Image (cartoon, rainbow, N blue to C red; front, side, top):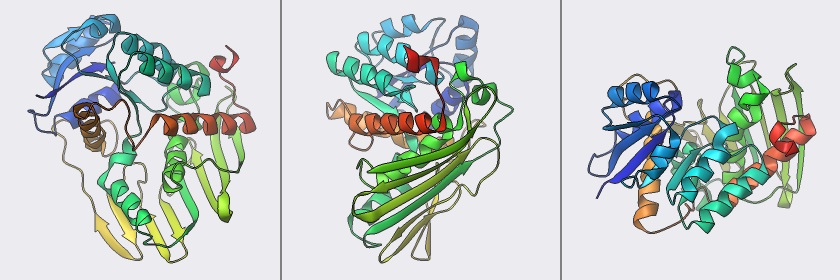
Length: 334
């Protein structure tokens, strides 16, 4: 039986996710329905992607009995209310990152998923790329010895986008792109909570972070540092430095298609899309979709690759970084 997907939101990321799903075998994955805030948007999306059902409200999608799992592609200030809509309707959920605006909201979402006995995963797509799977294998085998330093950058000029600059849209670099560097550090250090975090940054006039530099210290004198910026282009690579060698992830570290392990290059190309994409290497979202399918087939309620504990740790660290930089959202005051 194919995993039957419902797509919540007809925006740019939902377009790319749907294109990625179509790169998988149709006997394994089918897009059954799409919902948007207006019926016109949903119908336009459905026509473009050959989806049979289009809904002009998210409630209708939540009530559709033929949906196994919902992909939530709305912007993150709406993740909480949207995730709760679907979990309370007993729907499994794959929600875009960040899972929510802060730790309090993440706890609400996770509690609802548990209470309703449904699968829920934060769509940290990077972790499912073949290159990321290989990184975890190499680290587990001790290929570079004991990791002592992790460095990563993600910076692209995004100041022209309202969702980057406006606080009510969840603007700011940390929750949008800094999360990729943070999750990478957490993955390398196997979900361990750092002993110490120091964050510095610059904020826009709207009160959201523009450039952030974060240093993290872990047990046994292991370190990490990352920079994220919505103002300037950064190298956008990452490197893991161990006592016996290095693993380098060339640009673009959030959607990696190559690794350099102790000087040896290996390529991990993603499939070509059948429609133009909005974001780089988006067919790589197929890997997280397949993880969802495998988890559902096994009756699991979370993935071991990005577990509920992983999502909670990310939220806690994001909160602390924002606190130090001085970014407060309305959701933090509720």
